[in-house]
Amino acid sequence: MSTTVLALVERQNFIFDGKQTYIYPDGLAFYFVIYPSGENSPPSIKQYQNFTINGELYWQNASGAYDSYTVIYNARTFEEQEAAARAKINIRKNTPVFIQKTVICGAPLPSQGIVTYPLFFGFGQTLEEFEFRFNLKGVE
Image (cartoon, rainbow, N blue to C red):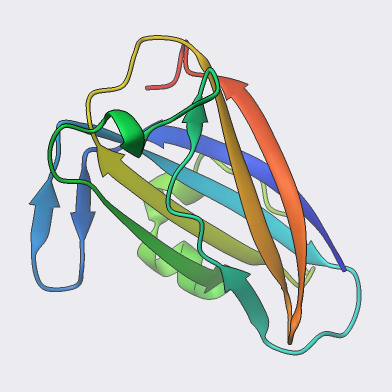
């Protein structure tokens, strides 16, 4: 149904809910670029609000508060609302695209380790599962 790329991961220790900013010791912002394979109904997601580091759930080790936030943008709203991230992400021009941003905050993160994050994205009632892995080393 789509081609999906984990285009950017950044450390982000806050979540802004539109009214208030919540600060945490650490966290990650994931930016996924999704290119639909054809004409599709509106996008659908299953929010996954955790990830693993070296096989252990991130929130499992959180000794305090934690939270997550997910938003889906089209190309125009992404450009308008996420200009700093947009400057770091290559998006094909004149191509239908969605950008999903998921922020997960909580406990301090280690300086390195293999992160695994499953993304569930689709259209209508059908979801595809994608799995992404990367090393935290070098993620700023």
